[in-house]
Length: 525
Image (tube, rainbow, N blue to C red):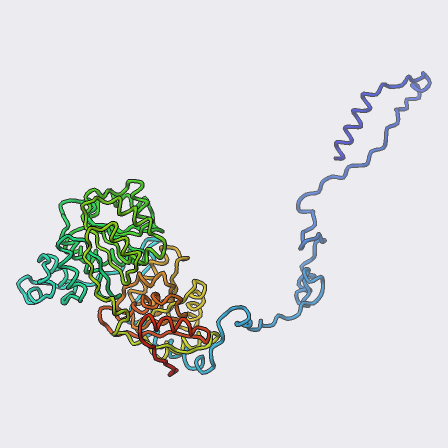
């Protein structure tokens, strides 16, 4: 700015006409007077500028001064005042900030050492952890196949032979340790082999998946790579479970299985569809997306399976299911299976199925007899304490803990992890890769306790779950059935506990009316 004003003055002096000067003045040699200019100060170098301290400018300080200030506890930020010594921050009130309530002194005093020793033993049995595969899905190892001799007793005495299945399928069943069919498999497989439409209802954990997979295997044309069977399921977890079951048999039967669900790469699914897969398992939304874009061709489809149809209707997939049915060829077999069948599902079967054969194998028997069920009265603020004591008392092989909200599942899983339990939570807010990694770790036993919302109630089929705990009692009595059905799979024994607060008596009464039995109280903690 100073330089600019200087040149501006010079330009003005040049433009102005010079006044006439007398000869006397010229002889004197005096120059016309100019307006005095302020002397310009030279710009200093960068190192000469004062150092910036905090928000203001301060003159440079010597090292001796700084060291003396540090020794005396004075800092530039404190304005020359001596800072008080920092004290350890007291623990926050956990109840006030929405954290878990402090556990009783009795539990905290004795449990950590016992849990650490038990955890070390289990870690030694399991070996080292698997490395992350860089964002790829971790595949669970399939059980080892048993060597089966077609002329031996393992094959000749297998209970699936009289059902009309081919010898190769019976061999695959025997190699995967399937010897005796369940009630629904005995009733379902012979009728499904005839190619008629079926409407089946059965309890959870009775082998519905194997019941509809075996007729599909029997009708497959292995020489063709076109899609011949389409299985529609409500959740991603159930999609992965069904595809896993089909793939374990495909090791001997030589066919390809492809799963389609949200949260995964669409381009990768399109590449696999171009390569060919005889069996496709998927959720309604992703399947309808591929059908609308003509990525999947259903002209050679032979079998359509709607698994857990009532659950798909509850989620809001009714219109998507109808569109999928209309996209299938008219000459196809439709098998509809579910744990419960309401009027809406029956109306769908009448409209889009051809004279379906009803198989109500558990219509009057909703509860699972092999499951030991009890309820525990507990104050709402003392639930976590009761849960920790219950896990220490029962020592479950694997437990599934249900909550009504995603926020509560996060809180319970975090609190149990801090107490030394190997716990994780799963709900719809997690990314698909993380959900799959958690489920794989739970199946392989790396996770002992899984906290979940109802999103996992229909998608889990793990035989190692010994206990189901309803941390929050469900609002819908049917959800109680599906929760408790995660234990006691395939006739195994299981236990189910339900926490009931003082203001949840109405929900408990609704569950008891639905089960047509009274749940006994259990309070031995």
